[in-house]
Amino acid sequence: MRALVCESPGHVVLRELPDPEPGPGEVVVRVEATLTCGTDLKLVRRGHPKVPFPTVLGHEFCGRILHVGAGAPFSEGERVTSAVSAPAATVASAATDIRTSAAPRSTTGSGGRGPSS
Ligand SMILES: [Zn+2]
Image (cartoon, rainbow, N blue to C red):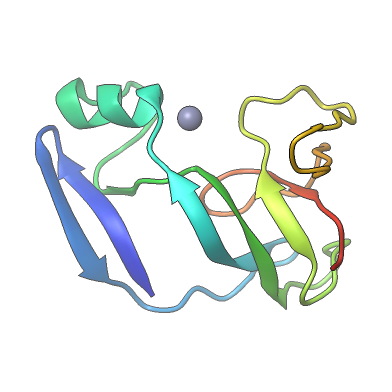
């Protein structure tokens, strides 16, 4: 997979990384859209006390479930979005009708279900 990696403050590179495999309760998401947010910018500029380097940027994303690990309550092909800033309750988005909820964590964040179409 291709990923934008921050290796240290001020050092960001586009890299090919091994395709991830889901562990128990995890999923692999084929990211269709992502962005960089204020946290990403702070991390690139000065680091973050809870994020060790190197780290993959783009923890706010949407996409489709590609692989499902044992026991993960998702199905391949489901549309999902990260919910890194949302509370553990259902929140409706008027713009996209994508719902966020508490869900298993992935290597880049937590996710929520979206419409299946
Ligand atoms: Zn963010």
